[in-house]
Image (cartoon, rainbow, N blue to C red; front, side):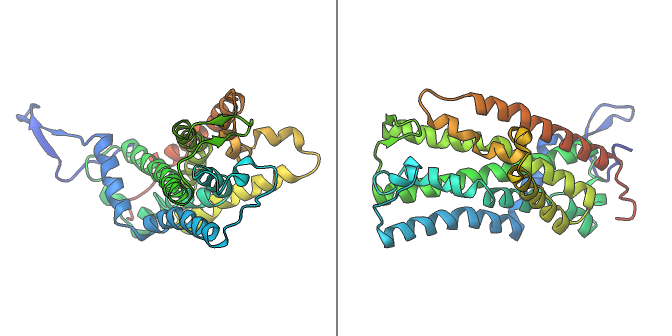
Length: 295
């Protein structure tokens, strides 16, 4: 059964008895989910990590005042020359594990928490179609992941600029760009990184729906990311490496080259869709058939 009849619905003119019942929109269900996220400690745990880690990084760099940043990464060499290097380096460090973990904290909990609390039946008695509920939960999960990425980028940018100035910066290709253009590129790179990160969130929503257990869904989502990283390091499997989700975590590098290298970005778009769309569709089908009669 794809929907459950509601207790008090919103009366509207019309119908056989002069009144009909207006079904809440998906947007309304989405707002319900956002309000629930705001009230949960887990929400602030992930966002706290997204804020604290850039601050720790900036403080550490200021305390040590290191100017001899070697290596092949041009942004590491510019850390004390331009504050715009800080958000790039933070995205580089956090993109591999921490941001996927933050996304998984909510995505893996978004459906399973309702199962654990026995509140799914209550939700589905609000004249809301099950498809609307699932869509609202998936949207809330990807919204949270998006906020975490840009919050981290904003804190890193403010901290870096306050410490080392709003100066021009050199890209991966060796091109020097102005500070305003560099700032635009920094946030475009973070937006590009959302392509694989929202895919991780979609997998988390699937596992949250299937397992009915928040811990299992969170650990399972992070475990898949780690497993794909391991697979990518196995000798002899180089041929499948470009098709691993974890390889797309670096797709944003193309935006920081001159001219812009769009190839990895387009590759990431269609490849991540092959992961995300089936995951969400499978989660949707499972949710439609969920037995909530027992709570």
